[in-house]
Amino acid sequence: MKRAFVIGALLVVLTLSLGGSVASKGTDNGATYEQLRLFTEVLSIVQNQYVDEVPPKELIYSAIKGTLRGLDPHSSFLDPENYREMQVETSGSFGGLGIEITLKDDVLTVVSPIEGTPAHRAGLQTGDRIIKIDGLSTKDMQLSDAVKRMRGKPGTKVTITVVREGWAEAKDFDITREQIRVQSVRSHDLGGGIAYVKLRQFQEQTPGDLSGTLEKAAKNGMKALLLDLRNNPGGLLTAAVEVTEEFIDDGKLVVYTEGRVRNQNMRFTAHAKKSYPTLPMVVLVNQGSASASEIVAGALQDWKRAIVLGTQTFGKGSVQTIIPLSDGSGLRLTTAKYFTPNGRSIHGKGITPDIVVELPKEPKEAAARHRATRRRLRCSPTAAGSCRTWSPRRTRSTPRTAASSPSAPRGATSR
Picture 1 (cartoon, rainbow, N blue to C red):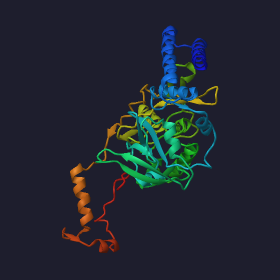
Picture 2: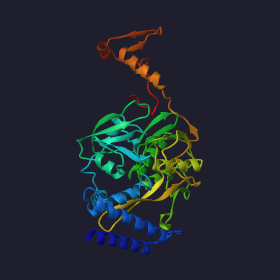
Picture 3: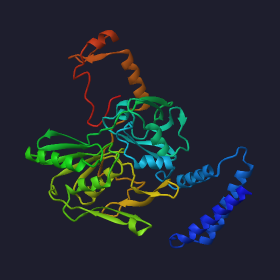
Picture 4: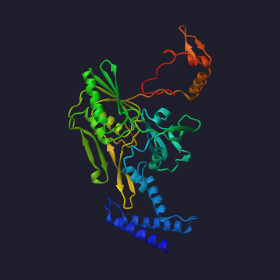
């Protein structure tokens, strides 16, 4: 009797919610009501006939999670504990791996490891698929749950199991959590008046740090800029807008958003106090360039302010809004999508470079032979072009020359 009352009350609440909400055009409340009857019917059967008794709250929470999981990888339900954690500043209590993740084809996938963090040092790469966290399968795991499991006290360890394209089997990575403090801007002079600036992430201080870096470079005779956004997983929208402002004229559109609700339709334009609107530029991107990185690259490309060079970007161009609920829980709901000044949608597509340049990949067989050979031999070309081998013990004490150890291209990592 009590269960029947709970089910009936739930149906009434859901029906009233439909009547009191702002329905979109074309919504058939009658059809939705019929589907809610089906939902409560299933709920009643589960409560009465499932082998184990499950509390109604747990059933409802599971149903909500399933509903949001079916929408897109970025929408999720936050139970009261997760919602509180999201609201509290945890920088002094929690460490992490320095990794941006998403759900791609329902699999937990690495967007990009942030340079200089534990994930980057461990060798994680864009596109890696995380199938286990501390031995627990990530199948059907919510994004927020995965983040929570990888986050923890600095100094503690977490084991993530990864599948990578080209690997015959999965591999475990044992990574020690750290307090993530990322220096978002790094730069150096390439010579000939060309400045190189690497943006690792879009943080609150990034625009100010970039402004100072550019000002210093200008005093040193900067004539052109190489802006590196590779493996930058994004960050704050406001930071992306302010970075773009450095390079386009005042009043020009940087990005806009569109959603079903009017207040989600926003436009962000440049309000530059001091900028470099004519500085020749090349922007480097790759598959690990996502979100805010794509906003910057797309705006500079649309305004013909820079040549975008590299590979197709990740394609994360949606806006998530946090909506509190009555019991202390909350929704992280996708409510809008980003568009470049020319109206191109970023989400699911990414930014196509003006010039596509991919790092060469060794064929699997050749790579395997190369690794096997390196294990057997330590070889250094002589002046005559021959090859001298050493035993492993002698190799360790022999300094490697520039000829025997060619430097990798910028942005490439030898593993």
